[in-house]
Image (cartoon, rainbow, N blue to C red; front, side, top):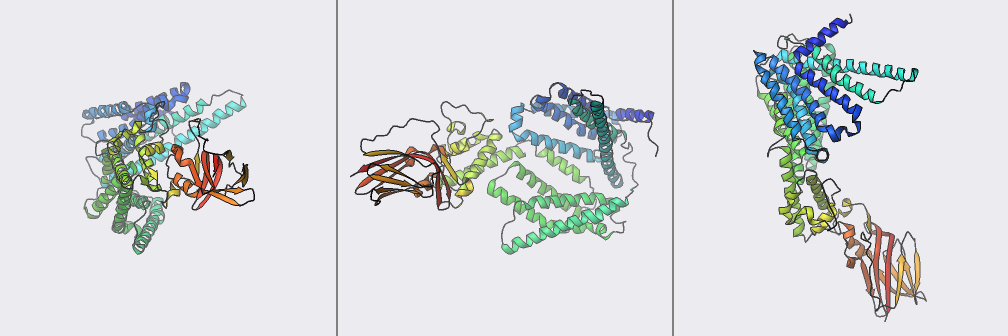
Length: 596
């Protein structure tokens, strides 16, 4: 194999630029911009330039796909306006991006970027065949894309590693003070300019003319002995799971939807790989993959929809569930198309997914708007149920309300709950001295407390809501005043990790233990006079969602009989609670005694 000469390399680079002038200019601009940022503003890369970086990344695939599309038209020069339109859309994407602080907290913008990035790469997969179809040429086109990507990444990667080793050698052999920024800048040059130029310089021009299919033996082995057996393994697992849930008569777990989706994508990939030679190769697995795979996949799509709809019914729609549901519709549509259509044009796979990625990214029908309103409806559903239960909620209800509050807060949609609750949620939990923004911690416990929602102490899942440790302290460090005129004796108790303690108050001895939920008062002859039970009181305290919003009266425990009266007031309280077991830790209290 002859190595290319410098002249040949320069010639190919020039030809690539003449063929992709706008795309390569865009790549060079992005690379130079990245070099500048690393040199002068490396610490504020995303804070100051996040939108620019994402727009530059986005433009590469869209401009490449546009060039491929234009090349297949009868008169490419007349389609120059299409490139201008793509540039205007990229500018529009950049303009609609918010400041970094909003960009960082609201996942909508990153999600929309990935949708458009996915759409751009899908566009490249079908652009030359948007208006013209040729099955062998399309298969060769996809093969050339895969080959070009691997080749460009391999060559640019080797170049980067080689230059890094050379720079490191110069640094240590000649004691040259090499700035670490140079490694990052070199990486951007290799990934941006070198990688893109190699991809475009070696990509065939005559896309439609490449109709001769050359099917390598390695690809046949990959499909026959690795990919198809994997697909069959997934099918067996999913059918076994389907049998299990039918026998147990239970609904499928939500996670199964991801496995069915992965199986469908694997099947579509195999279909693309074997499409031109499915009936000509002497391979049983390849020959019968279609339609057997799609027949076996069809019942599993019912399992897929049941799993998704169950999650949506229980917890409402989020962006992830919206996307999974959209993918389920896409998989179902393409499965029916491949089973029933006579043409079986495989470009329908990237084109349909491309349209879905764009369709779900905006509008009142889009993932973001539908998800916000669904979660608000879900909050209303749970909140209405809790109000009917006099404000008592289970641990799972509390966790669901908290997750919805955080979800809506991140998307600047908390006001959607104002009509449901009848109050302004943004102001419901504020003290007069507080200032709150969406970017600070959202005190969900205080919001739910302000709505009059309490944990049901008898709920079976109360410990699923929080850990089994409860801690109270006075957040405002107020000075409390107590009237002691009606009492004969007073003492301060400290439960700090004592296994057992006792205290003498007048003629009485007070016994307390961290592992018991009662305070025992004895006379000097060790005869028990009075017991102050605390277990039920502690259980009631666990109903507070915000433990530091406990009312003062709930921290008071009173007991009396014919000879003595006792009042125990906790000023600090921490305890472990697990089922019927309570252990006090780090608690302080005042004890008042009165003898009749």
